Image (cartoon, rainbow, N blue to C red; front, side):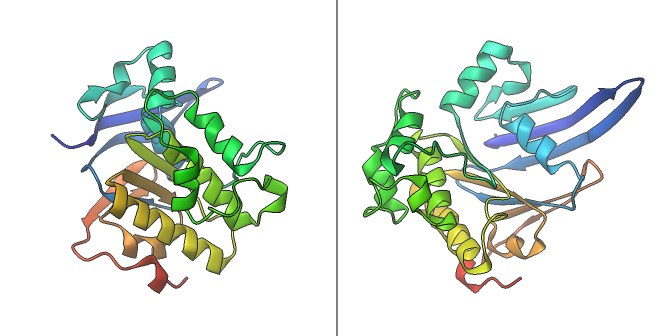
Length: 233
């Protein structure tokens, strides 16, 4: 069985008297330990996909499985536990607590988990061993995103979901963050999903899921992913 599986998943929003299908009969699989890039234009359904996989939204129909568990059948309480224990989130904007140090921001996430990783060790792993006591305002954008990644990893999640993680960063810093995510996948065996509109990112993925108009238009498995250091866009 695949680690992640979408089976004919649809999401319909009611906008007054109008129904809007954000996702339509979407099906795909992801294997454990893969770096996956979900790519498509704005409005293609990428964020809706991420929200359903991350337990922040529910499917109208279809089945979503993670590690053999049918999360599409979860109630609100189960979804809260799922988000807390099984999923690590990294967003375009870092969402750090400004009056907490890098260490404290990471510890904040690890306090809600049952099997967290050591905050200092995770921060050292993302290259911030000398920045433990710095506040977000004392860090660059790339360093703040590294703290956000460390915070997600400290939860020791089954799945790391990254929504446009380089969107607020310059080119060189964005490449460094992608390399960090790629290295994290390779060294920890975590399954990492990156949502992006940037087709150049597909070169580093083990699996690429193309999304268009709310549906999966193609899935590619890359036998020889490129290093993020070689990317150009």
